[in-house]
Length: 511
Image (cartoon, rainbow, N blue to C red; front, side, top):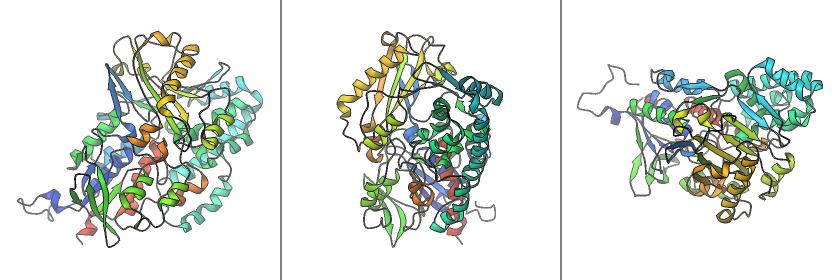
């Protein structure tokens, strides 16, 4: 930052005197990157092609209801608190973050439920009720998850992986922690009951992964939840988006909407700015892309500059599953339904095979049901409830005709919910809107309509993902779900934190 002695004369534009950083996209990764760059002396411009901030974390307001479009579960809240602290402010003064207790309920196809929480004594009772013989194994799994989280998230989550040597350095730890196994494979070493195996292994789905393929390093998620809790910001996750935009503006940065980036300007092997679809060129010392990694290299950079991440390689990559998400409001309240509920179908592994491997839309399905009005009455009119139901589905590598199947899937979800946790739902709906993988492809520019960018498998993790610092273009950096460490709020916020280690301080440009 400029000191008093270094401050330019009063007639000089202070913003113009600072090095300029352009951030493409206003998802959580892009907003967090902008704040961190602003705190390190850059004048920052965030460019968003849509008419509102948030990317996947946008907000839908309809008929008096407020719906978070994307992420709804906030873990590792300290990563958000750090951003307010970088601006000399307290998050608690601007965002009311409420801990969830229980975290969520898992409802099995037979109607049995497990309420997952951070209360160890209560979780022991739950395990004893389901399978008493599995309690010792459950406790051993928690110890293993603690060790994995300490290494995989606390130590390595904020570290860049810019070289194969970085992978070699962690190889002994990966072997020691059994990271070569799948999440479900590791869980199955500790517990035998199918319900407990599901309860402890479903978490990769929260970041676009298949529990039967995602490496066991993602067993860190249950420990992350236990250590820092599961939270909800009053007013919705969109309140966090709005808060971060306010921080950027408070730093003197700019957030522009309807500003679509056509290409990254590359001169002499270095990113020098961006060109908008309008033809406007914005020069910059640093360019950070929060766009999908495949879009960044396949469209914004172009084939002649994308040496490691060529179009052919991007096409061969594995992408996360797609999402069908239905947003709806009811004229009555369903007070027996909690804030977060996971409704499992009759099949687990077989269903995931259909989604991830066969890429076919099955008649049966599992759901995540979000009812924010259970905690926050402001998101629905008086006496009403706001919901979204999320259904994992194949991405667009499959042959599903979503123009036809979207409404069919909505009707199937209505029937399922009406028969289980929302009786009489058919006659209670007062507002309704849904999106399919087509929305993720067309509105969010996500490759193959995936919900979470690249699938988290071992060969697409850490250095094997597009790096946070572009491998071959100086001055270009990547944040968000498609780069290291991956999807989910802790992942994308950590990708922005990594910039502190790989982007030069602004003072380096005036040295």
